[in-house]
Picture (cartoon, rainbow, N blue to C red):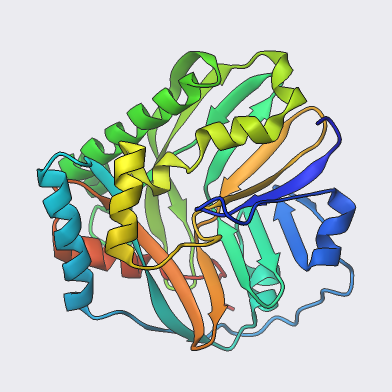
Length: 311
């Protein structure tokens, strides 16, 4: 397959969509990927102050899932697991408003279903070189010495090392000459509820040019994304299903485009979906044997934000 296309693949890989660029909007799918977009001129959204209220799950319910995960980690069935749950929210913004006004490198709007404003690249392929940028480690910027605390935290370092090793191994399934070209750099992200620091790394490798013959096959080899599943993948995904007790659907799947030469894609995080009970925001964090339940619960809630500067 060499013709340009847009793709959207859910976490369980049960609803994959591979669509010619021109047909995405016909299916109610709109995107803005590093400035490449199919947003119609009719999508004009008036600027207004953002109101966002979160109604988080009970701590005891989170603790129940956390304890299940820790038990499985102690048994050796996983050593890193990304545990996620929904948070009910209320906002004066529509899903389309959020899509248009949120600030993120990767944005996706599936009409009347969900919106995503992701900061995280899944893979990037440029000139037969493949890159991935795992994001692991978050702290509120208003915490005293926040950046230094994040970078010096042993738990966060262990978790970041683990995901870097996992993604190095993932890339090695499709590429050669794998290297960590940047390790654990901190980025400041602005949100309507305040800034947060987040740590990332850059991993890259070399591809044979034959990858263009079937880009979707390459993507499926790497799915699900290691940063939002865990390690080892197969056992960890089974534990995720047991702990979360609901399918993720498009949340923590991927989306992106292939332009005939290169490929750009993102992990579907920072995700708000429309349900019969109203809007819910899906978020989570990586759990290891070093994790502490209160701080993990607080991290899940800290990620419930919309990156729109206060107006």
